Image (cartoon, rainbow, N blue to C red; front, side, top):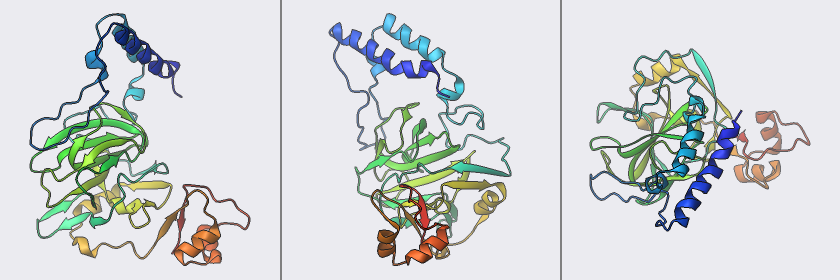
Length: 309
């Protein structure tokens, strides 16, 4: 349950900002868009940088001190610490045999064509640990879930400019080859919030987003969770399996051999009915009911995923 102190934080911040502005201090944006043209560090101008010392900052500090560690760091009940330097910062973690993860709130970080799958790349003799999504440099990338920015960094021979977000459901998502940041280190973000600009930095052969799902440092094939053709999740819950994660890391197959077994899905949108979905997908209403165990007269829930084959 969210504590009252958490609810009071926005009010305290507004109070502090109002006092600073009343003193004639120059108004500054909370964060600025950083467009990357070189390997120089990206600077973000934060509201806290412009607050005058005194009662305002003391009030903010008192509220922050009253917050629990779990409220400051999502999914802290399963993670050990808050590392802001490395993507995979859980060398001694003990993986559960299985763990059910609620992914029902997922949104696509960007709607684009899938250009490269998860899996072993014989040409480069290494694993590709995510999915690549085509984009144009400068396209807006959004957060896949609610969460907090754990890593905001740069790798010249890897991700380029990249972000790692940790989410309350236990997942972490990685966004690589960016051209700019729209959020700051340790910032709390909402699902669908713009967090970065797409780019072609780091080890990249063309503009795209490298997107990863990780659980306790273990890479998950994004296509186990997302139908990239329908641009939606396959099921509301994803069950992480320790056995499957170890197998996935050892897979040595070409990206072109990756398939979904012919299974297709459809995410229910506002105003859609079973009949309109049947027309769009070419699947009969009776078959949709049978595949998804839908009873006659049952109201469809917006955002729910239906199996269509």
